[in-house]
Amino acid sequence: MPPETFRWALAHGFDGSAGSILTVPDGSGQVAGAILGIGSGTDPFIVGKLAAALPDGVWEFASEPAFPDLCALGFLLGGYRFERYRAVKNPRRVLLIAPQGVDVPQAGRLADAICLARDLINTPANDMGPEAIENAARLVAAKHKAKVRVTAGAQLLKRNFPMIHAVGRAAGEAPRLIDFSWGPKDAPKVTLIGKGVAFDTGGLDIKPSSSMLLMKKDMGGAANVLALAQLVMGAVLNVRLRVLIPAVENAISASAFRPGDILRSRKGLTVEIGNTDAEGRLILADALALADEEAPAIIVDMATLTGAARVALGPDLPPFYTDDEGFAAEIDKASRLVHDPIWRMPLWQPYERKLASKIADTNNVTTDGFAGSITAALFLKKFVSKAATWVHFDIFAWNPVEKPHSPIGGEAQAIRAIFEVLRRRYPA
Image (tube, rainbow, N blue to C red):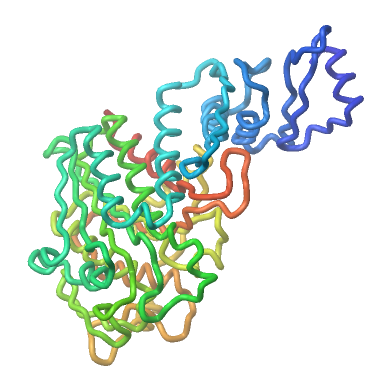
């Protein structure tokens, strides 16, 4: 930097720590620029700090950043604010000239998709029930002329989705399965499934009030899948895309399903209900069985499924499960490339016996409380047999602390890594 800028930084005690920002004046006292501290330089999203901190105006980097595409994305994401319910908005007009070599349209598509997921998750359940989730899916589908089919209410029983119906039948809004397809019919089949529990009381095994405070985010799997689908369709990948979202509210009324009930699944397996608060895996199971019937190349399901995953890996590192070693290697590499952290966990087969039932084919939970994320994945695995590849993501879909590129609130997780794999496998 120029000597006078360096002296200014020293005079103000600027130490270059990650996320620190110091504006620099010109000779007339106007803002001439700013210095961003990057710390160790390993976090390209630190640039997101600039979107919230810089004065309004048009800015550009004085020196090229190390990760230009990710820096551009971080800046776009750092400007995100959820202000739907605020009487007074706080619009910012901070513009950044993209660094040389950045794929600006792609950065915009990524930011739009991530912000879509954030908006859907941040919206409270009184405005984001099963019907609103359906409307959101219809909007995404309509942008790309995808064909939508919705099975709701009693039709779920007629069309053999008994567990989706059982979980959602106690709510004021009917449960439903949202199903849309896009792309050439002869292209490789890729199916995305997202858990769409608009709100989770826990059912008759009711959660304590403190555990319900964030349950508007229990449709985070659906939000992430819609964002990922938007990316796939926007990039016009060579796939036959199918999106399945079972959308329900796990409410309490006279018609609520009960602990000890035996539910028959679409696949034909009977499930003993050990706990009504393990409802997400039930609705996913019917959707997985449907997806598996056409033997797609890839099934990806995403769900805010277990607290055990957060205990094991915390909020920032979603675990994923698959038996496909090649896919696991691809997505691990992609996650590092695009800085979208994930961590593979084992489908440890000996734990499957913990799901045993004395009167049904399986229980929906274990009794000892151990390895909750693994046993949930093993439960889902029972409903997939024909797909060439199945991968399950147990996401949190929430930022509990502010980050440079994201405020506290809903978050997209793993979708950039998944998209990177699909983009490389099935280019337009």
